[in-house]
Image (cartoon, rainbow, N blue to C red; front, side, top):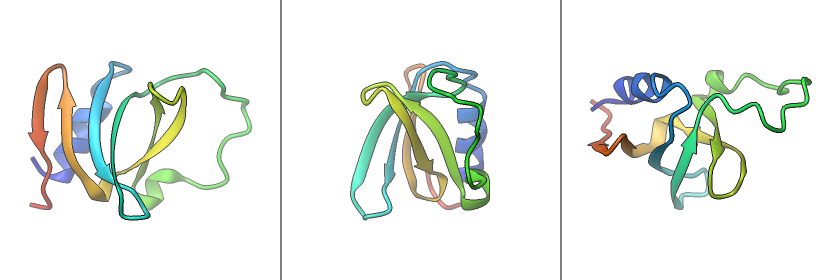
Length: 90
């Protein structure tokens, strides 16, 4: 699956839990169990930048109990509803 397909599949989860493996900015690999559309902790101020302009996707990290960013350019593996895909640049 290519990166565009991966992003589309993630956005179609509509709040369901999924797992992603990606490379962080510091070069380390991170596996995260997360979901979209979480309203907990939102204060209404918004962000100082638009994450989509930087190919980042804000998600709720289920293990850390907080918002994190997924770097869509470095996603390596995606698991949704038991289906697992390797993500490539193709």
